[in-house]
Length: 76
Image (cartoon, rainbow, N blue to C red; front, side, top):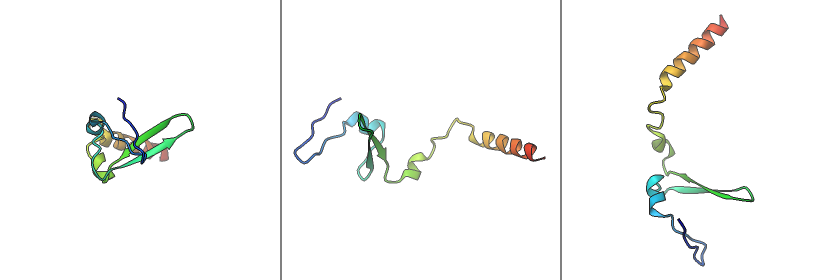
């Protein structure tokens, strides 16, 4: 995908990218420049709400409980 930059330094985020990353009005973009490449990271207006459901299928509760058991066993 390719977009143009206007005289004012503005560009358009292509619709497929906006949809894939759920970029909406009010969201922010962080621009990371390492001197060779530029990365753009979308930051949602409500970052906590955007994270909701991201851990599904990761069995996080079971992993937390197992880790706590391991810590408890090491302490004994």
